[in-house]
Image (tube, rainbow, N blue to C red; front, side, top):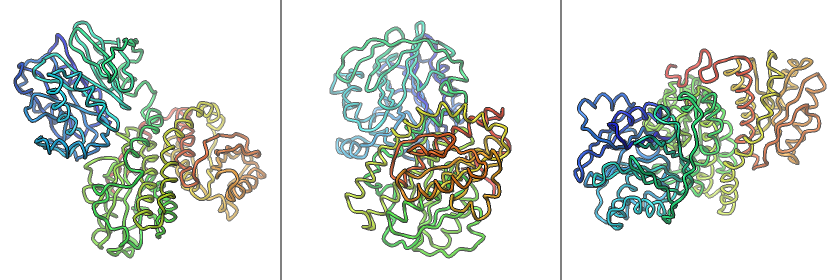
Length: 605
Ligand code: AGP
């Protein structure tokens, strides 16, 4: 995610743009930039810096007077967090500036076409292809920036929020959106554009909705909204009811809840352009046929994603996979060769345990292919290749959307390796890719049914312990559910393989012990086995909450999730577990976004 701000009006533009960026910095903070229209027809005034917004602000000692401008805080998807990759991006004359949130799927082909036309590129971003395309389109439309924007949007594939200004027309801002947020703030003699209302809520509570593939053309006194064919659309105005803090959380009570509900988009964004196979720019020439062993290294939630990845990679790529706790790995002095592929998984890219394990493996000749959510962080920088997840910034300490996108990354790597190693036929790959592509909507379906979990969770708010049972990929899901409850509700919780209970842990079951059972798909052999495990604990007094794609007769409470391929089921079964942990934390009066004793990134060993 990135933060997008535009201002045009009676005030000096710098102040409302900077204020908006401060309010949106939670959406992205690896670089920031501003462009202002100052003198008609002269190059725009632009300042942009890698790092947090404060880095940029420290350079703004002399800024010319301007009444319209755009600003951007970046969460890098293509190209690391550098000054040149920071937005705004400019045409070659420096008179047209563009900022972007989203992922342009066809930017490589667009860039080749534009370079052939003589455009010079200075960044690694997907966005820069758009500003040069817009420059050509504007010339073709006799300088009409809105008409040019409409034409460009028709040529783009992927998701975008775009804002553009040109120095020929100080005061005019043109914006467009597709599968990425953009909202209009309606002021008195001034107007605003932003990713969300928190950017301008202190100036106005009047907002206009923008729909899919709509273009907004505005100045200080007029706002025109059209579709991509130029048909003018009626304004859909509404009153903003939130305060500024609630607005930063998108109206949700906590960032964690917001991030739980962002999961369908996070999964969809991580899938864009990748289900048919991973681009060479991602795999960086790793020869998957020269690999004889895969080792996944990670911590906490990321480790649980790795456990699920083991099933998919072993089955689809027909290769042995070990999953190691990063903090244990190097002290075992494991066998590593040049034929070992090590996959570190890390949301932050800064976890010291994982970084030290990576360094050990690299020193011993392994190829490093990391999965990370933070572009340009240390772990990807020290890897041979990296598959970035596109969950956007995850503010809450408890990992939710990052976890689901780590699962998606595991499936994408397993698919890619399976095809590269000729273990998956084209039809098998296509079938799996289709089911994986259906996951965003299936996660959406789960989120539409979680409301009753609030009341259910409160029945157990005084429990001293909760057990989670799962089999096959349901076992890592059980481990993740237990971790969520521990770190949010400060309640003892433990995940078990269903078949393991009778070998000791069943002694924990007492009258009324809450047990969450993650059920394999109905009709599968493992479903019957799990049903037996549920009977075993129920017979000893447990209260059963069953999560599955069918009702389990012996369960006291049932949470239904859609059916999917068995390997993909944790993407759906974990969502109710996240919500249960969230609701338990609320019921117990805990700090949801910053639970006690924890940090978002553990940068010490
Ligand atoms: C998960 O809810 C925790 N925040 C924690 O287990 C986390 O997953 C772990 O510390 C790894 O962090 P990383 O993904 O940034 O490397």
